[in-house]
Image (cartoon, one colour):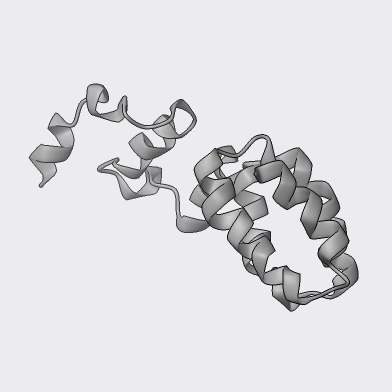
Length: 117
């Protein structure tokens, strides 16, 4: 195992996004003091992406009141353009679809659905 890590070369890291390569190298370090803990790793800017944050918030959206949800839906068009179509269709649209049972949210949800379509 140790030899495998020593033989691990940078060409294998080339499949990773540039923003995380150095951090993954640190995770693979043989010296434990050089490895970041889970808290440090979670703070990498790669994981602070607006799309990632949007999806995290979307998962917890049904726990907040209508005012907070309406504010989120108003800001959603700025993020929809930055996300891949697959994510928009599978994650965003399916979550928005659940809001159609709430008549108060339809004016905020419908423009986003049209934007995705």
